[in-house]
Length: 172
Image 1 (tube, rainbow, N blue to C red):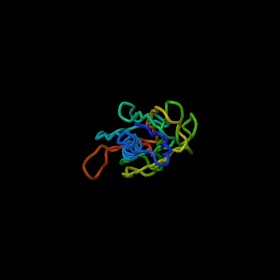
Image 2 (cartoon, rainbow, N blue to C red):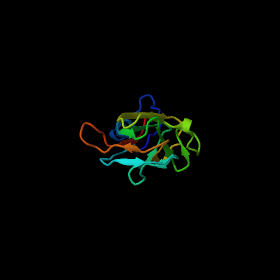
Image 3 (tube, rainbow, N blue to C red):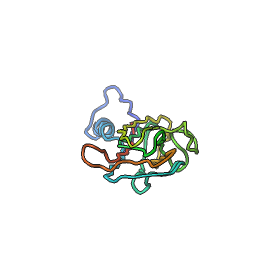
Image 4 (tube, rainbow, N blue to C red):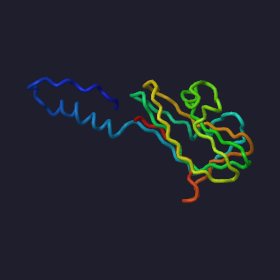
């Protein structure tokens, strides 16, 4: 369901059930049920790549049709790195054409949404990114990452201690 511009009501215009449902109910339903896609995985994922690669496009590749230009991207997980002073960088590749954090078709380090440091330390991350300039339409979102040294790991879900990765995209 998409958003339609509200109508201009005329003075003394008769309310009918059909008009009321179309103009009020349908718009309220849209506002409380905005488009959203999400995935939660109980699996763990690792990388040793020092260039941006997909975490796993079979799992973390989402497709969403948007009707406005604003979306929120969310990532929640437990992440760790095996090497002292190494960094884990995370970014989102949109429509197979550009990285949101870099604003271009490169995986520019400074454009990463999130960078973590620490050796074998579980970093619980919650990343929320508001994107304001995405054209309405059908889009794909793919979670990418890299590590500067060693092995980066999205921890598998093991109860309360580790959160399996959660990735979502929704319209605001």
